Image 1: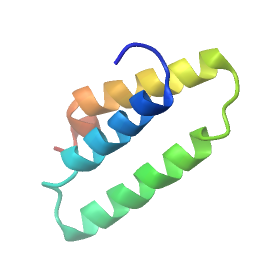
Image 2 (image 1 turned 30 degrees about the horizontal axis):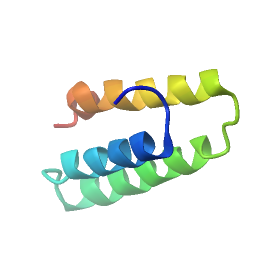
Image 3 (image 1 turned 45 degrees about the vertical axis):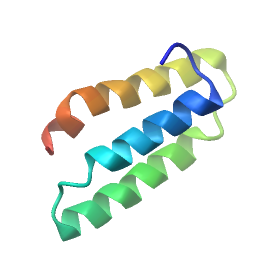
Image 4 (image 1 turned 45 degrees about the horizontal axis):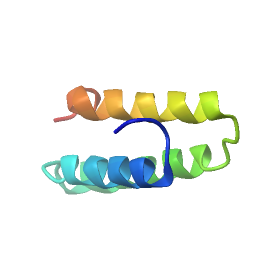
Length: 70
């Protein structure tokens, strides 16, 4: 994913949802709610630098094995 765009954010969101599939029932529900909450929180970001940083944080979380959850 190169740079912030709507499609890059949606790809990241879908990838994070797929990565959370192996979690157990309660953990999966919490994970999905927390993921949705974080994306909603970042939805209002208007500065390009803040958007890029949020996208990089999400990519790091995905590539680090969901912060050690998986």
